[in-house]
Image 1 (cartoon, rainbow over the protein chains, first blue to last red):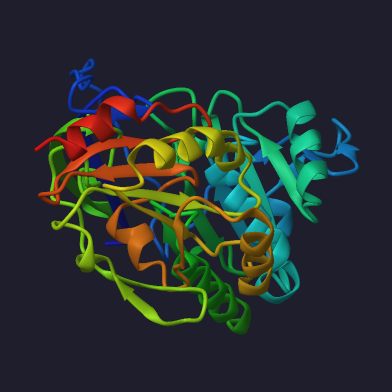
Image 2: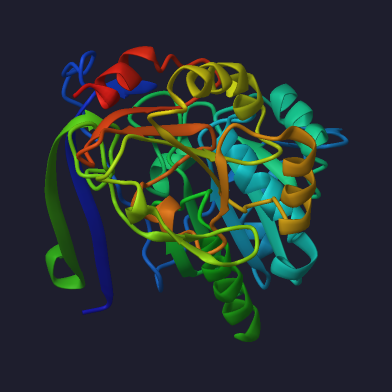
Length: 195
Length: 166
């Protein structure tokens, strides 16, 4: 047996998402199937390239972000639903606040469906010291189990080790839970310590 | 042969819910509201059980930097003016990106319409599966959730009437 392939599939039949729910207005929406998969810890991270932007502007088209080019470094992939929403603001703001401590010796990138122009505005508004990648069709998100059922990605965080394998992941990262950031910081520190 | 070279492990779970979104564990309308203790700004535990199940409760998860929370403030102020005598208004700061001293200074400047709690343990965020700031949960006097909503435009009148109905 040369390889072990493991995948996790969750099909959730749920009502369509609504912004507010109350007992008078609650109605069943169309059934929605949500697929959750992606490389598990110990598996090789899927290589990809995506265009990027940061607080200074849009990255050159001939210089996309490449995960494969970062082999030998710890990389954090933070898939998130959408720029300027409150959960994503909480997450990216916290990443920026804790950047020097949490991401020392690592490369972190945020990934969402937003355009590069929107990414520049979002990164500027929060002073983000890292790149935001644009994956409007969720092609890469799908490979990492972060593709959402609608137009937004799910909030999923991966730590990729220096060996290019998944060191840690959280498939339902809660942007409002301070303990989630503690776990991520610990995972990065552990990955950084491994050769 | 692919079958000899790899082992596929597939776990299929079906979550049947009637609420919005993926997370079946999210307490929604009709569910019992989680009862737990949350720190205040001084780090002292405050037991939500002193209100939940005993009187209607308006619970909002917020942050000082949250623009949706600021947009929602007039609606919360109006709700407090109309129902403050019957409903306990509680604002739980999620603490993410919000240092305690900043929150303390903000509270001193703004005089918010709720009792301010500061959940640096994230217990309430996990218990209520809070994905975003501005998330509001309204709980009736029996401890059942009658409303959840998020965003800068929310209307609480119907839910508060239901929560306070005898």
